[in-house]
Image (tube, rainbow, N blue to C red):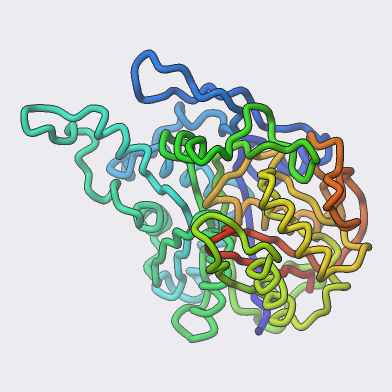
Length: 401
């Protein structure tokens, strides 16, 4: 595929706001996970016994007055995530070059603003049980709420899409942007993803018996499940102009697949995961041996980590440094793709390759590629995996020009 320039990128997670906060915590091996203090909706009910990656200060950061009709936790986090790392300036520069109608908005989520819908149902009023006036805003209760809000907040008027394929959502936005730009339907794209904690997320995953009561242990022999988190992140993509500065960042390849094996279980031989990675490498035009860092999906659930480790070992040489960073941020679901792409891009820029946090005892099924310790190395290519395990999978290849 023709490479796409990454003009700016950013992430906001439980580690803080912006890239500096992410990079510092990764280097210091300092987790953003905390004991769950997210208030349940039912009065008197105790928080779920688990650990979460909660973004500080969302409750104290209402949307500006001109965006007040979009007010909800998810859109607040989207707004906060648009501010750091010169992202708004990069959007303005893209608009100046191409016009707002030629810059697409493509964002991923899993639950969008469903937390506001939960609150509306918990506060039904009157004999006809209608939503309270402050939450009676239909745009807030649609799956496209995030995309529509980001377009309104940025003033971009190109194609606008919200992708909701669970864990792969904000990885697939890179693939959709590449296709739109290649087809001539846009000249640039704002891609990203936002997902916030809510009752549906916490209690839904707990009902699947996938939530750990302790901080998650990706690829550890004693792992029992995931820690959920919330996050937002964005990147500005644009067709390369042929005069890229040495060392500037690019999207070089993407691969997508579907397990199509079971409603919630991965293919036992990791077929969907392998197909996504093989497709991304082929589109980038490189062999697996050229990838220096791979950010694994690495949820810390027993089955998923085992299948991903098997698929990675079957494709990559032992020299690869591969890790899951969910011990730092938690599993941010629809935002995982953009957050972990940002971590892969940081590795490309600075040569700091994160290991795995909290894990101590490697699962015997792990290949030599999966590393628990941080490392320093100059690399030319980095990959990010975002897998649905039973659903949609996406792998991305990034490079320095």
